[in-house]
Image 1 (cartoon, one colour):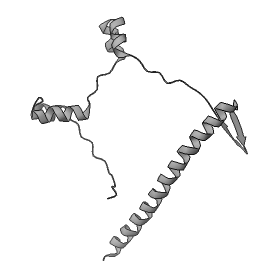
Image 2 (tube, rainbow, N blue to C red):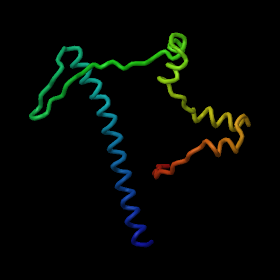
Image 3 (spheres, rainbow, N blue to C red):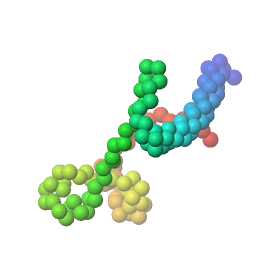
Image 4 (spheres, one colour):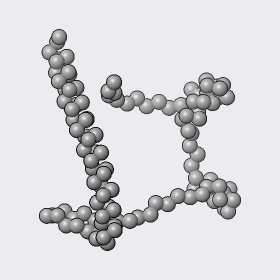
Length: 121
C-alpha cells in the first residue's frame, strides 16, 4: 500500500471517529437544550449568567401564512409580489418519469451544482 493511501486511511478513521462523537454530542445537546428551555420557561427564569456568558431564554413566534386565504383576500398583483413559485424535486422527477415533461424542457430548466460528499456505508 502506498504512503498516501495510508495517510488517507488514517484521516478517514479519524473522520469517522469524530463524526460518531459529533452525532452523539448533538443528540445529547438536543435533549439538554429541550430540558433547559422547559425548566427556564416553567420557572420564569429567563437568564442564567455563567462566568462571562449569559444564557437567555426568548420566546419568539414563528409566522406562517394561509396562502389560499391570502390569494382570496388580495389582488393577484399583490399575491404574486409576496409569494414565490418553487419546483418540488420529487414532483418534478415523477412528472419526468411519466413523460409529462419532455427531456429537452428538463435540460433547459435544470441547473446542477456539484458538491463534495462523504458517505458512510
